[in-house]
Amino acid sequence: MSTQPRLSIGLPVYNGGEYLVQSIDAVLGQTYTDFELILSSNASTDGTDDILRDYAARDERITFYRQDHNIGAAPHHDFVFRKSHGELFKWASGDDLWARDLVARCVELLDEHPDAILTHTYTAAIDGDDNVIQALEYPLHTDSPDPAERLRSMLNDGDLPGAIQADDFYGVIRADVLRKVKPHGSFYHADQVFMAELALHGRFLQVPEWLYFRRHHEGRALQANPTISSWSRNLDPKRSNKLVHPPARLVAEYILGYFAAVRRAPLTAAERRACNQVIRRWMSSRVTRRLPGQQKPEPIKYFGAVDALSVQTLVAGSEGK
Image (cartoon, one colour):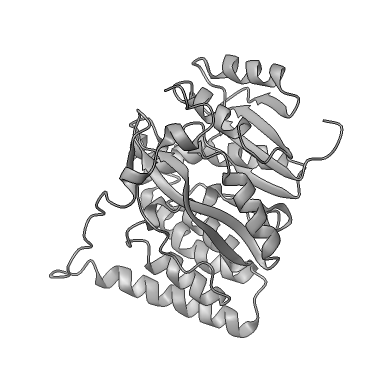
């Protein structure tokens, strides 16, 4: 590209051929166009590489990379970020969909609030046929000016309806801040620790509309890797040896990761003490809720603005479906 784009979008994918065309079309159909798109195949063995090469040949905004072996989901996500050039960065998934105005609305919100470091929109869940099956409002207090409150909400409000679908990882992020946090790890719930550390650097803001569509299907990483060991192995194949990386270690790294994130974050001494207290209280609550007689959280129900949303209307490239 002749000029540096303001936004970089990174799409790392492994064997994502089933929904990949839809996802890329949704990205390229954004009303906001000042971006580069970095596509990378993690040594895919299906038709993914052919799809990515075809798009790269047709659009000068696109750069295509192929890993010569499977490096794991976590290093792969970091790879596309390290190849980016923009002031802003956004990860994309090979199976999710974006409404046409998603990026424009997120960038606009960041420009309106210089203190915010990430913006996203409400997330709706879709099935394999693009039917909206869940649409819940964002419940977390990540917009608080207090870093301890942001951390408290991320740790304790995860069972609230809508929290599991928040997907702030796929928001528009200030790249200079993203470079300051430790790259995504490969232990149990490493994604949660990664996002918590990012939130310690500044506020997250939400566009109060369902413009992000998260696809639920059996091949998605969470469904395909249900155990602690398999999840971590998917993030990084180096975790494959259970003798070296037993589940107990992977969980310990998860808990200790929060304390390490607080140490690294640009906080005052008082803020750091408050955040560490939040973590200790969270740990205590996690133990208590497992005691006999404690009521388990209600399962999240599928409800919300489902009937009012249409992927075919909102997402570029879906009009003819």
